[in-house]
Image: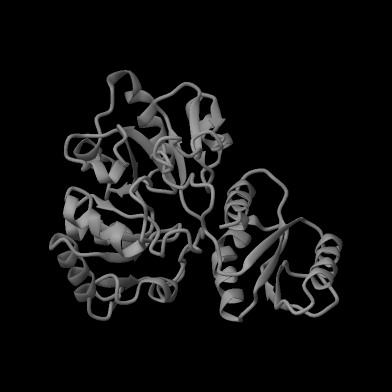
Length: 349
């Protein structure tokens, strides 16, 4: 494939060119409010296969389908009548926005999109560039994060090109994303509803909007290897793989305080004197010792911590560190999504 086209989302001609590429079965990365997604026609098996090839993504990991509006839902999903009021409440409260719903798939959705499962992940993104591209293409667009599989998610077009230049047809640049972590993934077909991946739409907000309890999924059993095939089972949802979002450098997580990070830095130097150590350091925290510091925003502002998390990890990789020390914010709200991404990024390969 030739060098990836770098298109400007604010240029109407570039937007139409990106839409034309999608209709032709090609791959286009585009900004959503969460991270950049790698888009292809969700109704074309061949186009969807291109996503898996470009990302080097295993077939057991399903994709999310993006729609221009909730009115298009019937194209990709069959909502049972007994769930209609529940889905309507969720769509009214969170769409457009960072909530993905797992719903019974329509016959139009290829097996590859769902990893052979009966539920398809669907959301309506809030980013104006994503909406414009979806409207211009007239397609439901399957789009996981626009990075190599398992690597740190992209929140700028430059991040996309760092991983996928020459592997995809175009990136539609709309500047940095705003939320910075992937969408919440919810299965509303069960009671309690099951939250598979935390994000900016929190379990508390979802329960408040519907009056229905939300249960958080624990992935250990689903991640087990099949004794017969020694291959992972197909995932019940996007984003529940045990290791994900990882920088090149090894990560060590520290329960969050400057003193704990200081102690971890001393131990890291003692254990590996020659290591190039990076620290993701919240604004106002001070530590002593040799380290590459990447400032991460105020500790009491989870919106900023989430928005800058992946860019900060990529920046430390670019600065050549081999070990990253990172404090963990206290659980609750959006911090649950940050903790989820960090725990998965820190798991051994």
